[in-house]
Image (tube, rainbow, N blue to C red; front, side, top):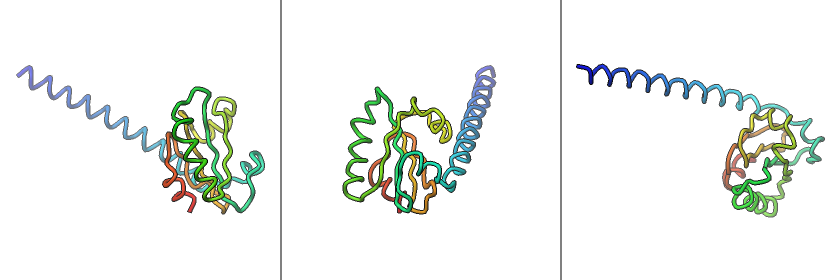
Length: 136
């Protein structure tokens, strides 16, 4: 009988942890969704991105291995093959913009469409194919 009670308590605790994690993720995604349709006019001027052209703000860090090994080569290929404007930002050195997009880890990218609206906020490595789809 004790084992059954322990199992029930463990199931309740596990369920509560999963529920809290799901609620936190839903809140995070809802916050990001608000950025996806926000105008990026202030970002265009601040980071010298041409209006009417797609762009990517790329957040990096001083000791980010994934940034150098994966994200930067993917962005370079995208820039050369598709004429995408990319601006590299130091996530620590740009705290205001980092907080604005709730960027907690690097690499991260903010995709801005030719319509000057935020298309996507990607936290972690994002491959060239995904970025290209987000720009379309």
